[in-house]
Image (tube, rainbow, N blue to C red; front, side):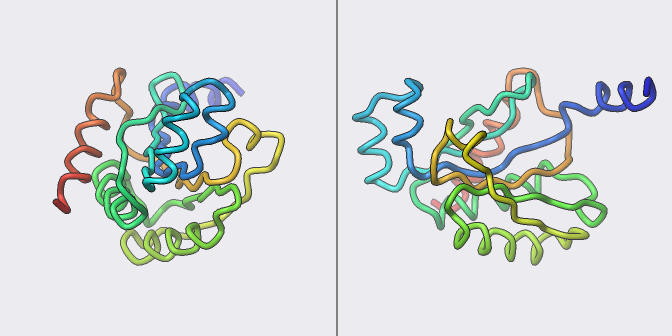
Amino acid sequence: MEEVAAWLEENKNRFHQAGWLDDLSFVAKKGRLTHAKAFFGTLAGVKPIGEFDYNGMTTVIGKAAGAKAAYAALMTYIEKTIENPEDQIIFIAQTDRMKQAVVYKQMLEEHFHPKEVRIVDVHVSCGVNVGPGLMAAYYAGKPISKDLSEERALIEAALNKGK
């Protein structure tokens, strides 16, 4: 038990979340964003890209303009942060975004050749905080920086790559 606890403590900041939320209305309902910003952001196709912070909380590290830009940025971001993808099972969590999750799964399989990619549903008990529109991959990689500065720089570079 102590050995497992020590491993978890040593590796807890090596687990990444790389995905987006495309319906911002539930975030506004929880008070984390104004309703006006949520409405116009959703209308404009803004995809806030989230990552775990050093304390395990999801934090926005960048914003993509549309799904095509978000997928491209996520592939670049994962490439820079994943370690030994061929030895991993990558999970994609989704809330009512199966079509996007299937596309993401195919991209992850083609680019990184992991052992497996599994798509899982986020059920109401957890999904109540985000509502429909979440699609994110979870994988092991490089340690997350304490202030997310490295991760923000990586996603910013990935977002600007296509411009």
